[in-house]
Image (cartoon, rainbow over all chains, first blue to last red; front, side, top):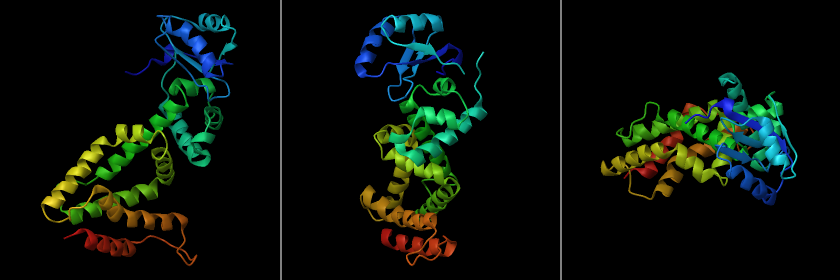
Length: 76
Length: 196
């Protein structure tokens, strides 16, 4: 199925390692409002990509920064 | 409201292919691609979830294009000579019209993504070529040999010629241009080796 582009949120983070990823995995996986997510650890900006029909950018930023990571929305 | 901009997407694809060929998989970065395509990093990540996703999608698309080109005017029930010649023509056309795609395809199929990409894009083509191979053996127009030997003899010489063509040089350093006479001469030798 084609992903609806309007439900995608993109963030720049400082999540760099697999260990960091494990930490945020717990938070993101346990949230039923997040349909899909992934983080590109190979990228300089450690881009976090979230697919959610209901959550907005500031809610995601809150979730990530609460785990002591930096997170800011990348806009087009 | 975001909409799909297929024009922009096509530019990204072409840039991605060029960048992969230039930098290799290791050296390829999403950031650089966004810059070169004049789009924001965010837009790029809307199209592709990460580098791995992009590489797989680009690979599958090239594979499908390749398959479409190879299938043009070809049928597995053709006589061996006719069918193989058609394959040569189709492969030459693809190599000459899409040199970057061919380079990128080589790169991706010989990487750790190779198996996935081949499985997703060339499954139908494998079935078609498999039945062409079996029909030809049954009609006694092709000697029964392993698929690897078949491929090496049937297409190896062609790809060597295409390499000379790509480099534009013959062994003496003089100019080399692939023409019909050279193709046909080589094809006849290949046919001699493969027919009973």
